[in-house]
Image (cartoon, rainbow, N blue to C red; front, side, top):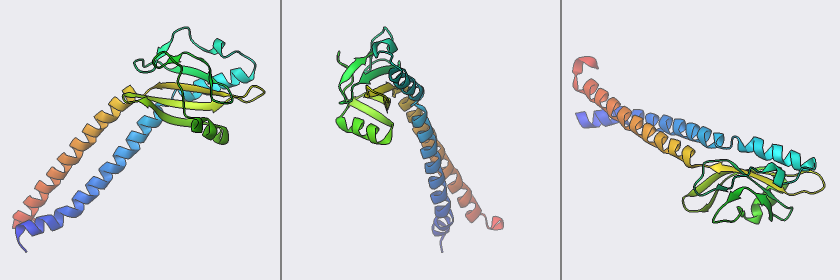
Length: 186
């Protein structure tokens, strides 16, 4: 067996293990970042739904400022009736309250909550939490926030894990070559 074959035989299992471990770390960290992007929307949606169930008006829950979901990083709130029609919202996209597919409200009705990445158009993504309003009036509360900062962190994570993977693969390859090349190390 020549030196190249020995190196490949010794290094390939290391390379596979390093790649697998890097992938596991990437997925775990990426999911932690993405799931963390649902905060504070979970609290906002549940508190607003409870307030509505207790008789508060939808308008009383909203801030005075309109949030442009295409450009702002601020969290926003929207209230929908039982059919998914917007009743009140401080969020706007091209001047209109957020419109979600009916399937989102059906899923929320069945499951009691929905947490989604909502992309109404290219380049506009939000972490959105939808909860039903219990009690007589029914309906839904949506709380959302831009994913722009989270996605920037995930892009940085891509670079960090990718660099670490390449550097580790090269480093282990060099060590394997040295070990296989120097007979007294074997």
